[in-house]
Image 1 (cartoon, one colour):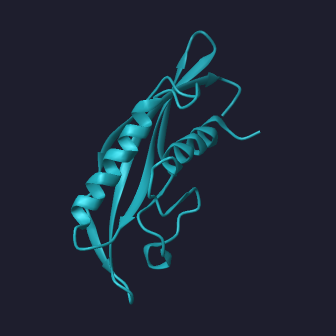
Image 2 (cartoon, rainbow, N blue to C red):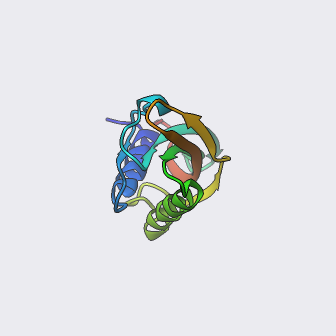
Length: 139
């Protein structure tokens, strides 16, 4: 059985896949020079911290990193549209199907440009913070 953290990553990926016009999504992150479908957004586990409670459970906070790529002359606008779409999807179900106590888009990295043979790709990370709880015996 997949860990709770992995299940949450899958749930975030599922929410991103609901975005209209998304070119590529998933858990396997392609490096920017391998990307051919735009815009793209992938789900990766960033950091996690856990706190134990006397009631035999753990509460954890995990920050997921969603590397995104956009192209075009209006890259900044395209990124903001993608960012807003990700935020809307997470806010529509902040429990991620009952896996989390709360989830929200908590920030972004700077938009940077990477040159490729075909064209310029603009890359930025979107951060999603998730609070969840699980039994002490489970990861």
